[in-house]
Length: 450
Image 1: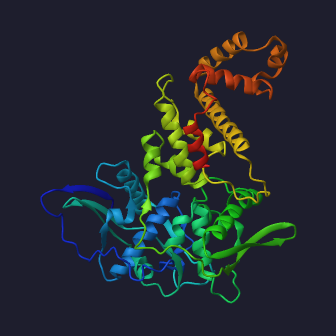
Image 2: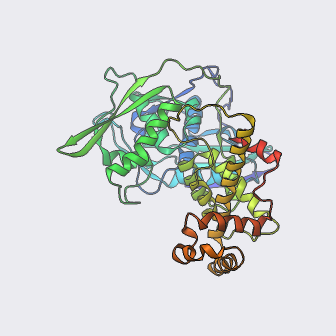
Image 3: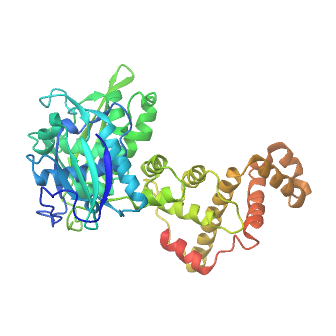
């Protein structure tokens, strides 16, 4: 089994066996849903990590397959209805091919999040085969499901109703998986998910095989995965989620979640199923980032942050006075770690008085300079060690005041006093003396993006 890409210019490769209708029955409903069998909610990967984009693409494929019916031997749809930004020669064609390879080759256990629920245990790939063909100028996707799971996938008797509308807003693997599992229990009288060992939840929510990394301690799992997933699901979807911990002595052994449905939200109607947007990951690949790292960055920092940071990386790469970035992934990671890209972190900010025009301009200038300093530091760290040493020697000889020499000899540029001086010196070397004086256009763009 595998994936093939053919280009049939003089006629179709084979006849379409099912009507492809991109208009969705009930599409005006803001909560367009698929029925996801309970045995497919808590997927435990056995071979490799299941990425966020792969899960989203899989859900959209499942939607179209359920509409075409369980009796079909295989399922077909226009590729652009599954994923956006696709054409025959685009980077994103390779992106989606990689996801389809993952779906075919990744062996998963299908199990219900509730012990004893569901009539069977199954082992299979996410899909059995996938073909991409060019037919009359249109890329088409065909796929099929394994015999042992097909009936339950397409005509489930016990299922969760998953909103494809809310899927769009969920930006992490753990958030999407937690939302799908909690959707199973939202109408239960108790409002509680099943109670499981927290180590059971770890591969389910992270999408990583348990043998890929040693499972974290619970406190780190709670900090890095659980809290972020709960915050995202509560903020983005129509349900509130609360963590419940169960201890044996002083040690937390099991966890579960309490779910409460929110009042019906007011959202814009969906006109058909929104394809999964591959534009950002495609742009990252074009900038020299591997697909795997691009998707990990998106999972960790969000697509908006990665999109903005990739633009900075591209600006750096095209700068006439600077060498090409040798390790784009490290450069991008340094930018993202700064926390200056994408949405604000989930936190309650104190109420502040709106500044007047003059103070607002000063604040924007300082924000501009802070971002530039982050970029300068990332560039410096990416340089070869010999170039770093040369710049440090030049800084010491050309810029460092004599009164600061003692501090520099003790702490180097890690000193809170020396560091801003060094970054300013680097800025002048790389971009000239006006690098920290933004134009009105740059301030306006920063204000709008901020």
